[in-house]
Length: 176
Image (tube, rainbow, N blue to C red; front, side):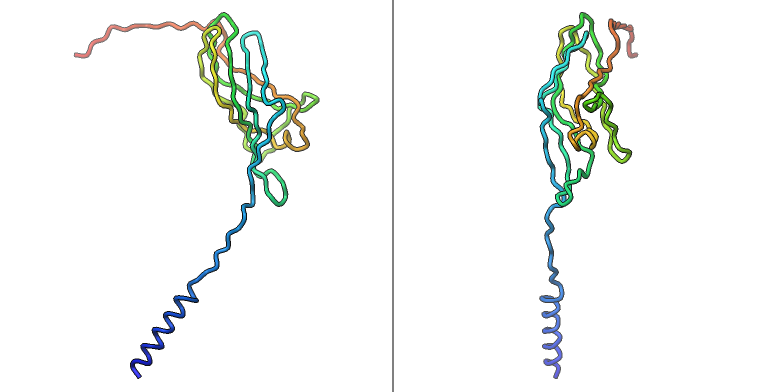
């Protein structure tokens, strides 16, 4: 009788262990995907009185819901930027800002729920004919992507006006 109870208890534990603890784990397919779209033209060059700005390898990265094809997150604009100082003075670049315009030249606004990063801090001092390069990674409004509303990108360079002069002072100090 005692062995019968132990055998039943052992069989019950084994049955619970084998059948009761197994869970079906379903692996779901991803609900979103990342899509890259190239800007046309992928390389642009703009010249002003003081600067030559070149943008290259311009791409828009979007996270899209696979089922509805809706853009889930604020798209980002990625690429390379090259700035050349064309003035005769030293220029201290602080930032580069981008504004997205439609075909009529009107700004394309961000929606309130979108992440806005359209300022790219640069903080570079350029000598005359000096060149600086960097990677561009900022957001672009969903409306600029939908319906191909983007017509132009306006670039604003924020810099300390020239002539920029610097002065070095030397103090005579000693540690006693």
